[in-house]
Length: 171
Length: 68
Image 1 (tube, each protein chain N blue to C red):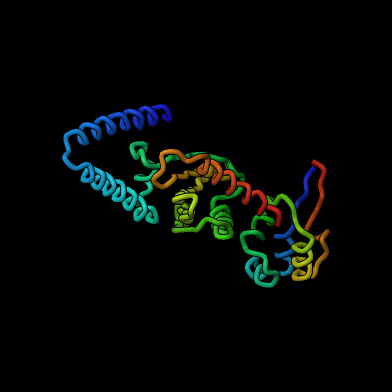
Image 2: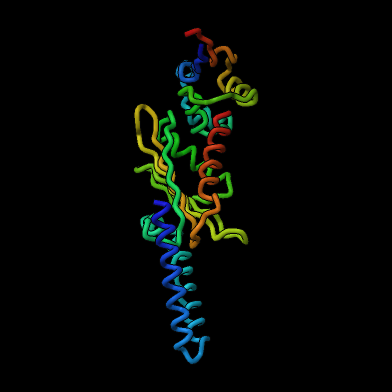
């Protein structure tokens, strides 16, 4: 899957560069193209930025066709019931740098975001607990915002949350 | 070898609910529940003291060691 995405991005970049050079040669004023390009990227960025806080657009951010986000998915088994884990993880997330954007106690779903900083546009984190073999299966999904590479941030988020959870088991 | 948590037994003897214990001790209900079901990795002395004080019991009433 990673290779497919890389090939798609590479091909897209080549087509984009060729198209741009063609347009620049044809265009009387290269400024027009620069403005159009800037507006296009600004639109795409704002689209991602405004949709990020709504859990409804999870599929948009996690879609393999969205080449502007980097996704990370991991499943873990924890031998604690989903209802306890749900409450526990909300406590953990609220006590960390992440912020709980929305949660659903019926499906044991948590949607958290990391704030926008100078170093990052932020990440969206989706956690769901599913009852399994006397414990819970934790589905962790993390997506970067408008970035084609995550520089390991998504994996770090996963490790960070699990570390905090393990620490919190000392009561 | 395992350590068994008898918090539910002591709570039943004192006719106290977990929520009440949580309010008295200041320990969250989730943490007490995790402790009660034996999924906690470790327990702090301060937690043990708070529970013992609230339930008027000894640490031995809550913790039990059994060879498996």
